[in-house]
Length: 240
Image 1 (cartoon, helix red, strand yellow):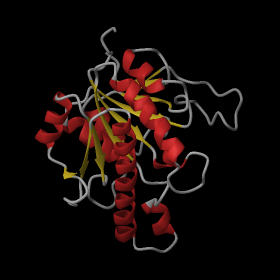
Image 2 (image 1 turned 180 degrees about the vertical axis):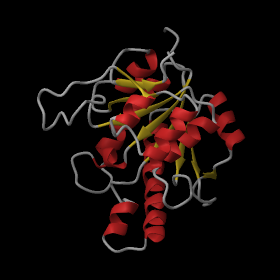
Image 3 (image 1 turned 30 degrees about the vertical axis):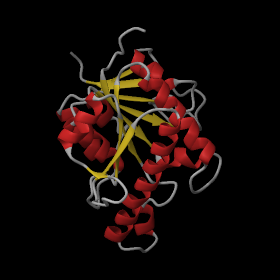
Image 4 (image 1 turned 60 degrees about the vertical axis):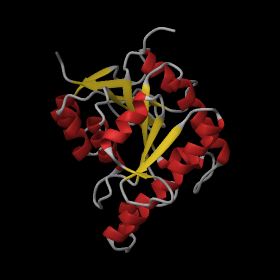
């Protein structure tokens, strides 16, 4: 097997991916499908850690708009990510992939606390590490948590799995002539307000020259293909 393009990556998964064909909640078949794709990517020999969203259960910002206190809503949303993380851990371990969940909010009976050196050691031992509960703070998205954790564990790239196959110049669902980019510079994304990630997360990537790959989770084995270096999706980085 050829060497992976990146030896250590942070995979960002949306909570909605865990809902599958449902509008809400956890769909076991969808969770198993995600786990099989992560397991296939892990077989490349790359170190893989994962940050999961919780939008299939609770999205803090939307709940706050509906009248719930923002801090409370975000805390509920962070707990929702723990549910998805535990479901993914169970599905991965059923496939023989040793997995650890670390949370930014202490819950020792459920998962390990996030400890940077311990997370790195798990990766060195070939385990998949799932980071849950966001950053542990309200007002920060799971995109920001993904970039923060990627920097902390010295990942070489953030892989953002979405429901579209890259970054376009306009919405491809509404515009048949939309053009997909293969490569983008951070500055171009900022100047043209391309919604790759929320701005806090994106600024962290740009400042630290951490590449982002935006690609579709739905494609066959796309996580493994990205790690292996196939040109799918859109790479966002800094021009040399």
